[in-house]
Length: 80
Image (cartoon, rainbow, N blue to C red; front, side, top):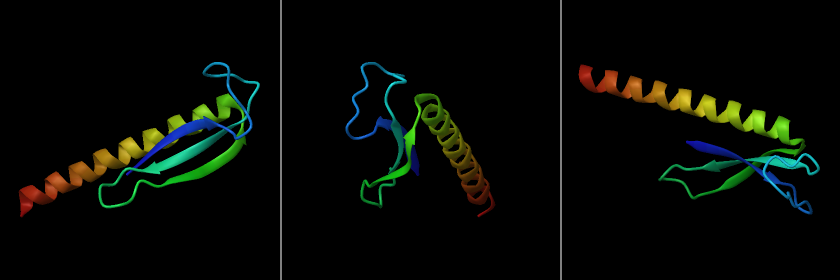
């Protein structure tokens, strides 16, 4: 499973959360217990509103996928 976060681009320092004067990147972190904790840059050079919208959308999709997987696993467990 993945967690998506936003971070200021290298060379930029945000003065506060949501600072629109800097560029951001969206990062994905693999949180699986079987995998190493690796981070991947997904998108770079984004404005804060664009980066925040992507993070929200990606995390919502991950949450939806987890619930579908849990539901399928519980259905499979009751039929076995």
